[in-house]
Image (cartoon, helix red, strand yellow):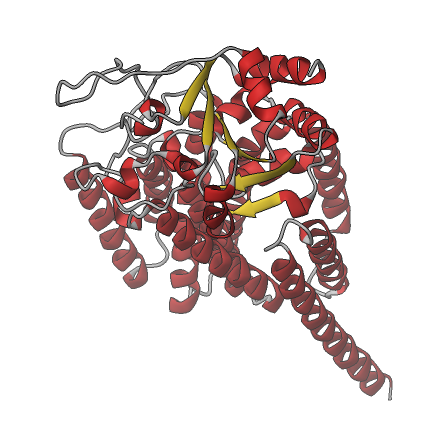
Length: 475
């Protein structure tokens, strides 16, 4: 009688856990959908967090959990670190933080794969083929995600050069390492009770992560971060197969799929293939160019001071602000919002034009402007705002370069030809705030700077926008 009762209780508990996982998965999907819009992103994040809470509780109730003390210690330590980091990190450093999160996710999945493989070895019953396969995949994807994300963080933080780094015979060397990994994997399938070979595969996966990100320039970081985010999801899904946890499989698959979709969107926004981004070593650090064209024809640059810029903005009917990486570096988003507020008080209609790859991570400009409490309805993506530029009095470009370069539309010899851009050159007037005439990530001279309707306001974004605010207040 007691045995039957215990069996019924365990069966009911298992059913309850699976139903909770189903509810959590549904909340993940709804939250992910709402993350697609700035207006609903906060709510989507909360919904997904509730789903994760349900998933964690259901997992802790599972009878396979045998050490709650260690779990509690981990939760406390992680919560403290997460809370302090969230409070301390600047919004301009969000790309670095996302990179670290991706890396830690990959590390966790790789450690699960290593731990489960070692547990099966210690059991002395041999490692099944399917367990070996999943462990190898978990180690490979997780290891690449870990070291690749750490290198991406170092590039974004300026700890290493943000320019592409290449060396002779780089691709053949990468192919050799990959074939070595395949050979080691095949050997492990035949003889799974071989810890040195398994550890060798772990080491190769970590090296792959470095070689994966090394030839990628800082301007391609939106693609790299979204791809590494996808990898972290795939690694989590592999860990789910190892642990036979349906929730982890579903959650990892959602992250992996959404990351791949976002990566494709980023590549489309640059009119480049993923292969070109990963292996093309595209871009430069951005050098200063002379005010002259390649064919020897002189180009004239019209520069203005903040007082003239304030008059152009203050007496306009409509202004479109185009933020770029220069605004992020200068941390000028709050000052930009203050300028917009002053213009709106004068009856000027203000909108923001957001390019998909402006900044160093997907949605970088949206995050910065959200921190400055810019209303969501003022944020417009490229496809929506481009038809409006012809009716716009002044386009104010703050630290953007390649994403507003008309060469992408007109010059077939340009390396960025075909890349969709924000067509600020169609506005009645364009003001560009920039430190100098340096090229963007693509290393291409920006034709916008020399057009008759364009004027340059030379200086840092923070300094120049602050002066514009002061001058607008005096109008």
